[in-house]
Image (cartoon, each protein chain N blue to C red):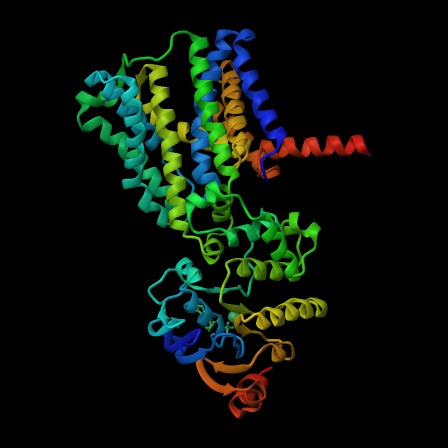
Length: 243
Length: 315
Ligand SMILES: Nc1ncnc2c1ncn2[C@@H]1O[C@H](COP(=O)(O)OP(=O)(O)O)[C@@H](O)[C@H]1O
Ligand SMILES: [Mg+2]
């Protein structure tokens, strides 16, 4: 059986900087993998390459056994992978419901025109990330950081991914919101969703993942269970030592 | 967001009102309104592309010009009936736009505006040198067939055309397509990140915009009966279109319509006081003021006004 996501020998250079250095890892279907590393280690850059927003210099990215490096971002999303952004990027003048609507749209202009929006599904997604009924008509300018992250989750879920990449899901959230998002991730894991999760909040991350990999300056320095990775000498030196 | 009964009531009221107008106003006013109708068509065309997606076109006179020249040449030089020449002009505008402007949609921001501006200027230079026997060169063309006689008929035709375009664009933009196009204007990366091919969406918006520009340009030239390249490919004409859309409120259909009427009548009333090009400064200033205090335009001011009124009543 092929992995849900298989990254092999990935290299990304920004001029002289090697942001991803011969990185390989794989993610089985239904598995949840934590990606940790200090600021600037290259975690977000890995996400951008998987989504096709950045082109790798070399290496392959396979989704369910199919090489996706030649696909555009929308094509990759249709193939079943979707991400959230570290800095939420909502559509500022649209309501929460309309933001989610964009995620739900088929990439087909005829269907966009002739079939109506699925407002019930919009509502369902909004409620599932913890919005209330009244929030549906609010615009992002009226929302707090926590709500923006929830919106980011909901819009990503709307694209019906099989593999979700979550970038700093807990940044800027209150304890209550962290619990809410954690519950959501746990219930999606039960339903078989595959996750790759980046978070600086390690205590919050631990229960959400089966395994972890740690990177530093684009290079993998440890791989294994969460506690193995945390106890790794190199990880403690680079990551915990700095923090 | 959905279609509501009052939407149709408002449109119905507007349509009825506009068609009854010739009973009560003078022919002079009707002639001004004809210009307002065509300006509204051009502003809607501009807004469908630029107001929604944020790709600011400085090339709309280019599109309008292709539509106008095509039908003018076909009817005057080749005696082709308007029933054929106008549809051909529309298709030509879409093709010409596709060939020269569409590649520019891959360029972001101000560069897109610059490229489109360059094409407007290029066409202005070209019509003067390439086949002046067909285009009339610098002097343009006159004696082009007109479709109507008298102010009232010209008004009815332009009103019907403008309202048909406005209502169909309003319906189209009420669908998820309209939402997707507006989303591009707010954050194109997020639209791609939501799984939508923005290139295809922008191309669709562009072709729709070109179609309306071609249609408007063709009917306009058959109203005027003449064609002057200096007036058509003019920066003032371009700014009038853009300011009308911005002033009324972009990403709406009614906004560019209101903006067009506002601008046309303002210009008309300023004519005796400021006969020269100074009046363009005046509405430049008005646009700037409105843009500073209410960037969403007149439509938003009216909406707020209504909200405050109903609040006042319930309080
Ligand atoms: N588009 C870019 N151009 C140049 N350098 C970049 C770009 N994106 C990221 N970097 C650099 O690559 C490194 C990794 O960044 P990033 O992936 O954002 O790290 P992380 O998400 O782990 O904090 C950083 O040194 C960053 O400055
Ligand atoms: Mg990051």
